[in-house]
Length: 118
Image (cartoon, rainbow, N blue to C red; front, side):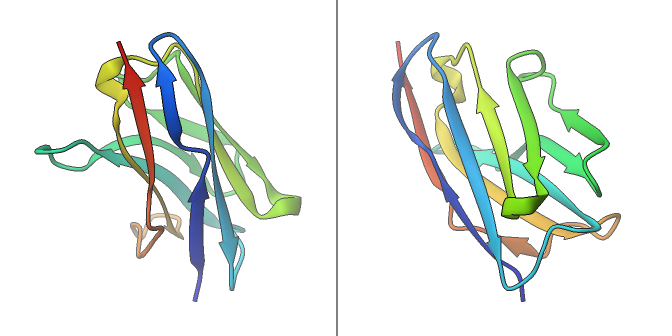
């Protein structure tokens, strides 16, 4: 069973950058879609970005498009979310999730907190 561990969260000022990492163990991302989601206090979890199958395609929510970039390092079995020009509204618990492409996200990490101060 795939296990995911996120890292890289922290406190940053508005306009700053962070890079989140999601490392997989017990399996690989090969053939899987990997997504990032976030949940702010009092709000529902929302989609942030995804990288599909072997990394040829990426998808982003409108709220992060142009500021966030997702990448995959297959050799390290890790995916990254580079977050630039951060805004206070990006503050949330960020989760990594994965699953066979087209079959949703059955595997989730525990999350990493991102806090952006104004």
